Length: 423
Image (cartoon, rainbow, N blue to C red; front, side, top):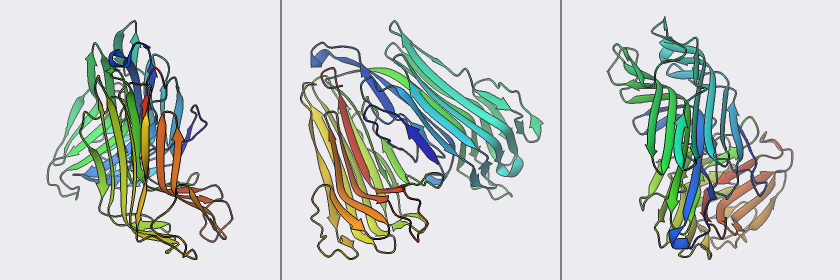
């Protein structure tokens, strides 16, 4: 999976699994904080995801997400994958996804080639979902124009290239499939559209061995524009683990997005009992969580990642537990209070006995024959605080086969605040 992005600091922020929406915001008002209205933009897409109950078996594949709420930080974010394979449940060819925004629109697009689901029961040469939301003169709108189906067949029978929204076809002895699934919300302050080209539900015990509760989504695109009232909009995410190594990138294995309008006080959580990037890192339980509240008088946000039982590169780094936390709050939209850092338990770095659980921010360790290991990495900006407990950069040819330039992160917690005064 490969993702590229452009934003106001020239940073690349990659987002992954489980995917819900990521966000970009701009401020339209400069009146006092208690009366400020912020218009927030969200857009995302991914090529494929397979779940059995609450367990993710595949994907999201190539998630493209607007990763921040930065004022006026409009642009394009893309992700791609050569293929996805969890046959016979789901297999695809190339996946190309994008998320973008302008001053008045948000757009998510997912384009997937060579689709084969349920061992050939559903096939297509190409599926494309497009979601666009917009606001003009205070009026919110949405559109799925651009969505298309090429040579789609269900149970061996051809299906229209433009099936009506939420077309449902029974799959005898298996369940059902929804084509051009659309979930919308439209009010005087919000426009939201989520599009799934294909959404399969396995609801019947079957002789083919497909587990009841299996849920398959192909070509997901989402976008949203809404007004938020309060001293600041929020943003950020929590995730772990992720390897960015060009075409062999992997993860993140857990991921939670904090939308610009907040979570209304709820704690959004994604977790797995164990995780691994083969040959690179294994862990025990991994949890990512995010919460944010936007009131008329105050705004607060927190992101947390916790990773247990870490073993990185055959005990190059090991730890009983690693927790990264970032928080932010404001009551006036002009003064932002950020804090956060990493807590290590049982930390050990091979060849470096001086490294204990008490790690100063932005500690760097040179790893011979590999690159640089950074611990408790903290990035501070006027509108953002980002904590990365473990950040490994490969700068030397190595026996592991990791390309020079590869980056591995264990745990990321990022929070953002954006207002008229500090965009």
